[in-house]
Amino acid sequence: MTARVCCSLISALFCFSVFWNTRDAEGTATKNPGSCPKPVGAGLCAEMCSGDSNCPNNQKCCSNGCGHQCMAPYKKKPGVCPRTTPRMKGVCAERCSHDGDCPNDEKCCSNGCGHQCTALPKEKPGVCPMTLAGVRGPCEELCVSDFDCPRNEKCCSSICGGCLCTPAS
Image 1 (tube, rainbow, N blue to C red):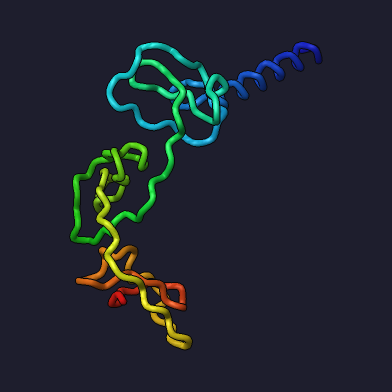
Image 2: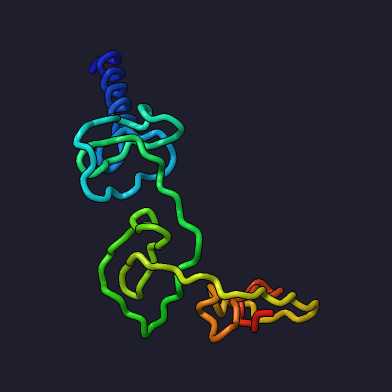
């Protein structure tokens, strides 16, 4: 093989690999950061974009259920999923893969076996007491959110870096 043919072949393979690696799972050219929200129902059956480069303001070219259109990328929703316990076994199915798959304020949380959209309870009223100097508290996380705690107790940080349930003040 001559050097010219070999060089042309290498160039072609390089171009193909760049093209292939800049496409997402749907085959749409990617550029902008983030991921597309999951389509809900069927949208307009028209190709309004062919890649992120067709979209303004860092929007992404996403499937709308029938065609493609520019959309704001999915953002992680605030809040903490409830802790699962060994006794807590939900449906062993992946009903969501990230918060963007869930409606409104629901988050994609583990149910003990799979994942499902979960409405998060509101934070308990009150504030965590100030930690006292010299009182370290537990270094492990005994809670993740207020709803891991009984009654009116809140999940508060300890000086050591862990979390514990403490009566609210």
